[in-house]
Image 1 (tube, rainbow, N blue to C red):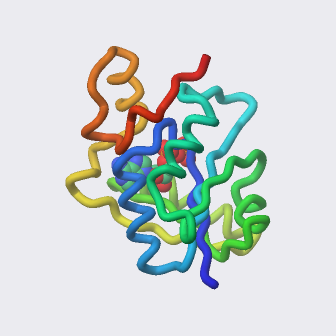
Image 2 (image 1 turned 90 degrees about the vertical axis):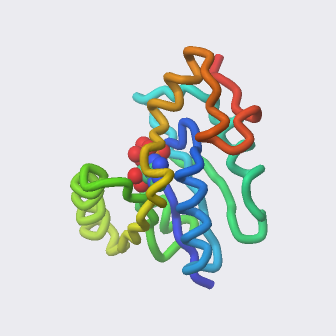
Length: 153
Ligand code: ADP
């Protein structure tokens, strides 16, 4: 059973993230999506709504969604995943991700698999989606089933 761990804030989980998971399902038997929860970083959408939202998008036999604290590599090992998954939109993502990937390899010997975003989804960015939502804009072009997202109180 080949399993890959997809970590992120997913605040919110966009159509870009969704496409990366579908691509990974062509390569791995299971994808575990890990929402990182960090005490010094508060999220905009509640953890519960992000978990429910992501779970509603996939076939539960092949995609599981969890939250985790601490090191990504430790969560990856705990979930018995052999690889980490990250999506790349552009060279800026690559520059940032390559350092993290090298450090994760040094820490626990875990390789990161990078998948390129579809060109049509490469402009989607969770921070901008949040800003549109905060200003009462329509985010349905960027997020599937956006009605399931509930703002943190
Ligand atoms: P983080 O806070 O860890 O950067 P994000 O939730 O912003 O988490 O992103 C998680 C992963 O998804 C990262 O690998 C990021 O590069 C990737 N990603 C973000 N937006 C997109 C997109 N539009 N298409 C594909 N991948 C994306």
